[in-house]
Image (cartoon, rainbow, N blue to C red; front, side):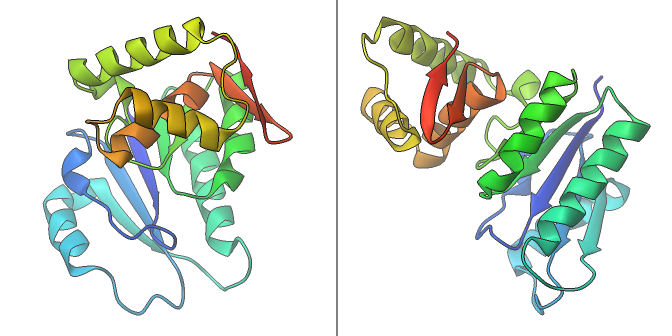
Length: 191
């Protein structure tokens, strides 16, 4: 079984559902120096994880202070266990260049905005079917969306019954699997 590690940016997330984390995955939750209260629901969900969970209160404050902590722990994890599958759960797109660099080095890591489908190897079959359909629909597009917002809109129109989190996870998976990348805010497809 692959070692799976989830690094959670609690500073910019409103809701975290740990029930979506695969069994056996290690979880690192990063929170800011000024975050005086942790969400009660999250603390209750975290308790059964026991030794698999680590709370990391960052040192100091400043722009991107928490992000640098996550980047450090991610690098430490991949240096110690290069076969680990690491996922950063954050809305901060600033992690994306780092993810692309690590993926180009052959490491398995990604940033997600939704925990559903965060670890593709443990996703439900239905999620895989939606993703295959999405790739097929994009392949058939004569002029695929040029901006991320347009791509998200296409996914929303093609999969109206899916939750917004699931739709965003589909879009993110395109980036994670390097089928789509962004250059100067313009999307480039490799389908």
